[in-house]
Image (cartoon, rainbow, N blue to C red):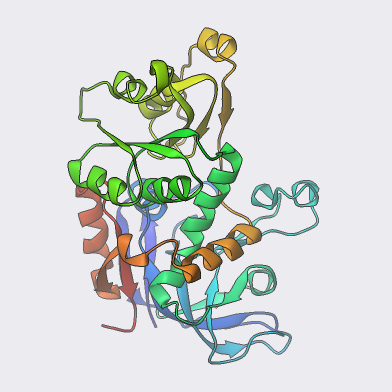
Length: 346
């Protein structure tokens, strides 16, 4: 089969590899759609991911497809079903799993290889984190369940309530999902982005106030100007992954507010924060990572219910052979939305 293999920093090759063999508990899925995402772009740029991938390795993790083979011990699935398989599954038995923090599982099993014609789904993911795609949901929509599940986890961690003012920094696909879900939760959203096109998209998804953050500008006061008494936001969600944005997020929150550092910064990054501000303002700092099977199930329900419109996030399609050029385009276009990679359209 044809598949994308990551060999290192910006070294991505689409080449012929062996079709995966499956074990007794595994499934083989014919990939109908695999979506590009900001995490994959970071991995492409950096050449690795501390938790998810160690090159050389098959690449990609947001997918939907059709079952073409099942192991003899698999139950509940059959050949021909359309499924979405999450990119991880917890063990269910460790310290964190017993405390319903499965995303922090001590033996969290990750699976990569979505940018390929076929993908093996390991037995644990088959058992714990694979779902039949609801009727009326296409492959692109189903594949979006994984990033949406991460955002649902972030919304839950942040504790957003109706009537809250929530600032979202960064308006790529993840940031826009935060704008949409926070708006649906009854919050008043202030969207902070670097391009007017991003702000226009945020407004269409429910943002009530828009702040353009151009290079060299200081968005903190602009955000506070959109809050009652210039006190700051009840909650601030950083969806960029830069130390400067982390620092700015803290300064945008009101006393007693919550800051969620959702965007992951590069390895070994350190951020210096004002301890007096944190202490005397009683700020709560959170950092949400990944998702759990519960969040994947909820994400599929939201997509099937139409609360999230796939066309707002997945705006292009490309064959697998063009994957490298897609990532190169993403590198030069900040905030680029998702492209659906169609491995069988070559």
